[in-house]
Length: 305
Image 1 (tube, rainbow, N blue to C red):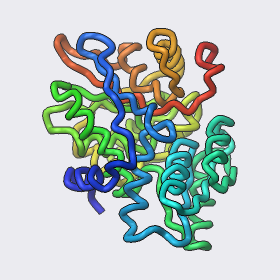
Image 2: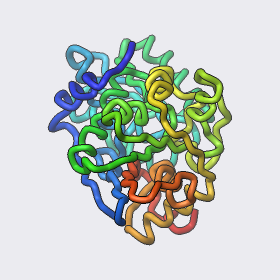
Image 3: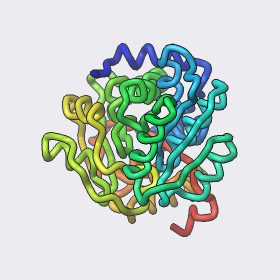
């Protein structure tokens, strides 16, 4: 099933009033941040979660089920509680204690299983088949992709003169949604850790391919391969794909704290790392927007790792 700009626009209407219109902050001449770490549940993912559940043709009597590195699970749990349905979340062992605590605070039933996201996803799919709960995929469902794209609609209303948008990629749902939500004149730069190059590898191979998962972004960008829906969108969008080192991500996260007092997880700092490290270098006069996408982290680690 394909996803279109019209689907993103429809998602915007569907989830209106359910999600926050997060602010845009100009931090330097020609550079703005879209502060999606301030979103409900601490990341952009609540957009896709609400759109998936509300697109189901009635609230699911069996509840909802999802696999997640943490942020998607938090988003699904938040949306489920807001809508009055049960949420069951499967997470891998790499999920941070902060995210686990957040899931339990949102009254989700949590099962921690598998070393990586893909293994938790297998367990969640099996459980969904047994219970009849509505599966809410972390990135590879059209409704989820369309929901994430509402971020781009907001951004272009708030900063209409932006030339380039930089966004982190794990499974690709956010990047694909943003690609669909942006006007054609705006360049999309996708940013991934060198240790988890799901989209980068797929673009080189001409199809999604599995990659090894490790490094500081593994708990949020830890998909073993880019989603098929996202790849279809992004391979047609002629995106600029760049990779950043773990050291660059750590430095970007630290800089966001020390310079801007923003509490951001490693994945949330990945897009900024591309600018800070020079992995992406804007042209003279280019106006760039960086999506700061997640804040679910232990503040005690902001200056140490």
